[in-house]
Amino acid sequence: MKTYFILAMLASLTVICGCGSDPARIDASGTGGLVTTDEINFKDWQMAAEKCVNSLLESGTLVRADGKKSVVMVSTVKNSTTQHIDVQILTQKITSAILRSGKAVTTTAVSGAGATDKSTKQVRDLQDDEMFNQKTVKKMGTAVAPDYSLAGEITQMKATQGRMSESYFYFHMTLTDLESGLAVWESQDIEIAKQSKKAVMGF
Image (cartoon, one colour):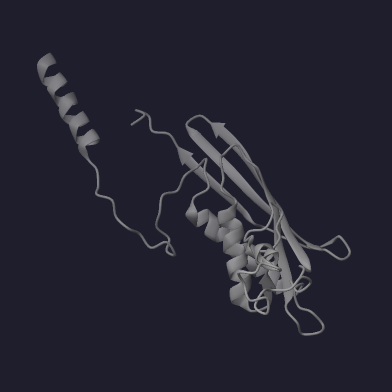
């Protein structure tokens, strides 16, 4: 009987450990994908960026009276969670959505962490360089300064009760009028809550 019990346990472990699946692509815009409790995954980024942009565009803050498009720069997004987070994923999704809306443009010549694209300044350093036709070199004083700055912070709260664990992520974004220094828009309800339950056996 003891031998039969051991064989049965080994067979069960073989089934549990041997079951797997081949890697497969999923629809990044769909509802599939792994749901992680303590980490932010790609669906979380999509949801947060979509809510942020929708709220910003619906507020009408970016609409100028003269009909011109507002220029937005990305300042800093502080990661106040316990996780290593690449906040550029969020900011890039937001700026892409702003551009697609046609209601504003974004600048890569300046940001909270320095120029996203340094070429705007680099091409102006070509002045007086004999290698280049000076008529084609971009002149000083022609780059467009931003009207608004987008900054934010990501915070996290964690809780456990028995085998249950829960994480709450809050994305707070603020748009600042760079002329007055006043906040003219703040994000609302950009939050993600996730819950999971540990298995009894720990498999």
